[in-house]
Image 1 (cartoon, rainbow, N blue to C red):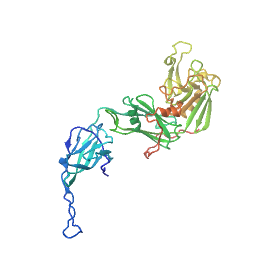
Image 2 (cartoon, rainbow, N blue to C red):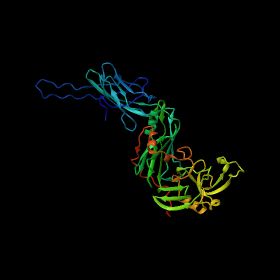
Image 3 (cartoon, one colour):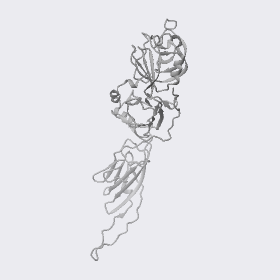
Image 4 (tube, one colour):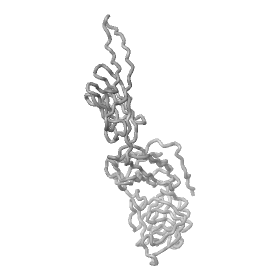
Length: 427
């Protein structure tokens, strides 16, 4: 489809170069059915319009500037179509006098465009010509590192947020909107979600509620060559696919000294625990499992406890499920079994018997939810110490999107996306 005199095409500008010409064959005339001796109006003569039209460049065109086509005085443009490599037409505007045309749509960097130009010479001659131009590949390209990272099995808990780390800071509000437009989240089933700018280089995406159980999810950064801001263009595309497992939620009641484990809304187990004692009280709030270690060394000096002091410790701890980067775990604490279910005596972790810790470890995966309630400790940080994303209200979350609105994740998913991790055992 071509642009009409009021539509279609795209950008850059530099030197003027004559477009290559395509000489059309003469059009045959036909006689009129009118009175004897009368003749039909002459058909337009096919002419070489190459010398009559000029473009603003053919190579190394700046994608941040409009692409123009201009006719010689006395000639006029009748049609201009600029097509991207994928066939998409670039929007443009023909001047009222039909002497010039200018792209109004955006050009991508590092792309080759085809241009079809139709014109007449003002003397009854018409013709078409085809040319092309290439936009320059920018030195400053924005890439995105997508998460969750590849350290997991490809199956995550329903609390796992999506993360994007940009290759450089983006501060301008309009540029941030372009970044969000370059990011696509699709899921099956579809949900309503939104982006949150944690800082100038990091974004998180989460649904309004937790992800559905056993959902398939794909995150893509894919607008290679698109303009983000002056001199900055989207670089190499990337994508990340995974799925969620069952909906697993562990609620730690610090006042009742009990952990309640739910799978898909059903209570599966209750476990006596101990949490942080005064001065080391466990954080309240929703946390997301960050990782698991069958054995981990825990040393009090890493959280500011002086070696040799009354509260110092240096232990090999088993079946440790991490929920903060600062060192809060759910883990085996055989030394405090007498206090579990009765009192809070830990340095901030949730401790339980070795058998219970092994059970919890086996039944939990990265992205599952651990929520602490009724502790006298501080609130879980939203960012920086793990994933506290779910502690932010939905209204406040949406306000930190550059686009200022939620989006739906409805859309086609690759049918070959599979579950690489398999289900957890059901007890």
